[in-house]
Amino acid sequence: MIIIICGLPGVGKTTLAKNLAPMINASVLSSDKIRKELFPIPTYSTAELKMVYDVMIVIAKYLNDIDENCILDATFNREDSRMEVKKKLGLDDGQFQIIECSCPEDIAISRLESRKNDYSDATIQVYQKMKGMREPVKADHITVDTTQPPEESAAKVAEYISKRLGKNSG
Image (cartoon, rainbow, N blue to C red):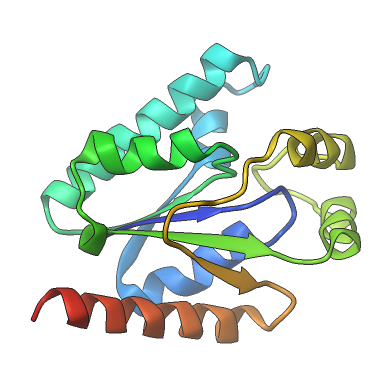
């Protein structure tokens, strides 16, 4: 199964991914981490963004081909970028899940202000810019309120995924 965890900067995507991964035996592919591996001093250009997402999708394909669960941790601001993952990997609905993280703006901004020593370079200005560009998730998905404790949110998502997998295997 491939799981996209999307949302604006500071909404808790990486925290949810880290808590969810061991519950569903998944690897996490972080766009922030991949970006820093490819570009030690990122420019955040369109070409750079495309390269980061392309690398993420190639790795996800290999993991999916060996039946490994994979979580893609990235903003995925546009509907076509979310659907492109499903299309490029040739996934059906039972192999693909979108999780949208959300929290009140003041909490996201507070989280961005207090970040230290992580892979993300997102600032409040980046948050505001992405908020203006972000397209709502139209595809089938679940939304997670990340103001709840991360372990609880991850457990709810794991339970949802488990029920969904059970429905698709019968």
